[in-house]
Amino acid sequence: MNLEAAILQEHSKKQCTKIAHWVGSNPQRFDALFHLFVTGPYRVSQRASWPLSYCAISHPGLMEGKYEALLANLEKPGLHNSIKRNTVRLLSAIDFPEKYDGTVLQFCISFLEAPGEAVAVKAFSLALLTRLAKKYPAIIPEIKLMIEDQWPYQTAAFKSRARAFLQSCR
Image (cartoon, rainbow, N blue to C red; front, side, top):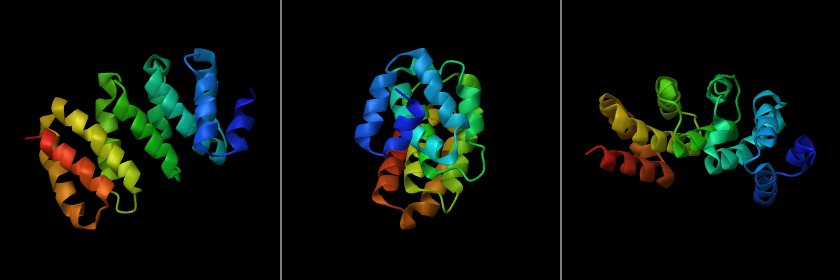
């Protein structure tokens, strides 16, 4: 399979699933997908993020040695929402090395604070913050304040994740 061509062929759940199945648990194929995700042109990176998240969630061991590049990718200016969403989704679903907790925490808080951030990015950030709050309860008051400030203006998805956060912190 020409991976880049497959990524650009169409942007659909069917195509995402096809790519994720092709990659499977194969480290070389995952490396190729990850490379396109972090270095590809805008559209390729955007579309690669979806199957990448599926592969990483299904086979978390494939992410070994890639966390620094994954997090550095989040620092790029003008990042498409799908890249942020799929990155935070995969981080919320897998165990990553503890040494990245601080960096992940900072990203999630900045996504949560950003007024123009996509709701899905905020919702996945809340899911990840729920996990991190169990390890670092000192963050709970700050997150609660952010939730309270945004509550009146947010969607059902945000409120659902916010409720889960608040319930887990009792």
